[in-house]
Image 1: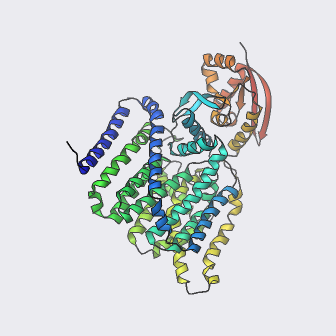
Image 2: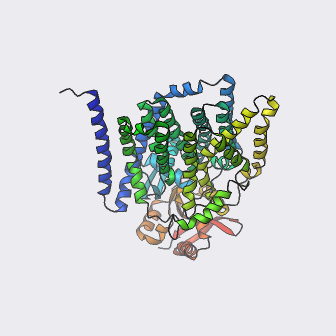
Length: 561
C-alpha cells in the first residue's frame, strides 16, 4: 500500500510527538528525583548532540539567506560592519582582564565540559583521575545549572584540549557574533542600515558586556543564542519557508538550555508569531510539526528544571517572591540611569528610539524582550544587579536595549543627513567619548570575589607542585581536574574510611590537602571541617601564601595508621 507524501509527513509528526511523550513517561517512571537525575546524566548529552547537529545542518542549508540579507549592503557598508565585528572580538579579548568573575561556577562549567567529552555524562566529579591524558570520574554528582554552555565549551575542548584559554576565546568569538546577529535583526526588522550598525556599536560598547565577554561565564552565550534564535524566527516570518521554521525551532530548543530564565524566549516566540505572522500562523500544520521536534528536544531540559526545582540556590526562603520586588526594582531600574555600571546615554538613546520607532508590532516585540529578561530578576531573591557578581544577570537584557538605542541614533543620523559628514559624526563621537570614561572600570579586576580569585591563583601554583601519581583533597576538585591532576572532595576523607585507605594505597606520589578559600570563610562549620582533616593525618606544610587576612596552603598528608 503506497502512502502519500502528506500522510507520511503527518505520520512523522505523530511519531515525533509520541517519542516526546514516551521519553517524558520514561523519566517520570524513574520515581524519585535522584533516579531522574541519574537518567539525565546520560540523556542530556545525547539530546544536546542531536540538537546541535540539527542547528549546524540548518546553518549549512540556509547560508544563502544570510548572503542574500547582507548582499544588500554596499562594499563600504559591509566593510564597516566587518570592522565592528572584529573590533568586538579583539576588544573583548584585550581590554578587560581575562579572568573568572563568578567563583566557582566557571570552573564547574569547564569541568562539566571535560566530563561530557571523556565520560559522555552531564555531571561534575567529586573523585577522579587524569592518567595518560585520559580523565576518569569515579564519584560524581548532578549540577543544578543548565548544560547548554558546558556543552558548547566541550565542543571547543574536543578541538583544542581542556584549556581555560579555549573557553575564554570562545566567549570572545561569541561576543563578535552577537554583534553580527544584532545587526541582522535590526536590518531585517527595520530595513535600515544606520540604525542596524548603530545598534551593533552600542551593544559592543556596553561596559558589562565587554567585562563578561572575557570570562568563562554562561551569560554571553545565553545572550547570543537567544538573539540567534529570534533572528532565524524573524527570517522565517519574512520568507515563510517551513525549513526556516525548522531551523528556528532547533536553535530555540538549544538556546533555552543556557540559563534558567532562558525559557522566557517562548513568550517572545508566541508574540512574534502573533504580531508578525497573524492569527492564521497558528493554523498552519507546519508550526505544529516543527513544534513536535522542539518539544522532543527540550524534554530532558524540562526534566532538568523539574529535578532541581527544590534546590535552595543560596536562598534561605522563597527564591521568587513579590517581597523582593521593591528593592530589586529600585536597584535594577536605576542601574540604567546611574551612569556607573551602565552609560546613561545608551538609556536616553533607547528611550528616544522607543519613541521614534514607527512599527508598533516590532517595537512591542523588542520591548517585551527587554521587559521579560529584565523583569524576571526583579522577583528573584538575589536578582539585584549590584549584589556581588550578579550584574551578569543584566547581560540578557542588553540586546533589545541596544536595538532601541540604535534606532535612536539612526533617527539622529537621519535628521543630520543634509549636514557635512563632520556634523553627522558628532552623535557617534559623543557616544565613544562617553564610553571612554568607563574604560578604567572595564580594565579593573575589581574587588568582588577577591578571595576566591586569590584561591584560584594559588591553587594553580600548588597544582604545579604536585608529584606524578599524587592526589589532592580539596573543596573544589573541578579546577584541579582541568589542570590535569588527580583530585577528590576533601569531605570524602572525613566520611569514608575505605576511601582513605584506597587512595593511600593507590597514589604513591602522595596525598595532599588544599587549605583553601572555604577554610578561611567566617563559618565555624567550614573552619572546623578543615581542621578535622588536618587532625586526622600527620601533616607537612609544602607551601603557603596569604592575601589580606586569608591564608592558602598545601599540605602533604601521612596516614597515621
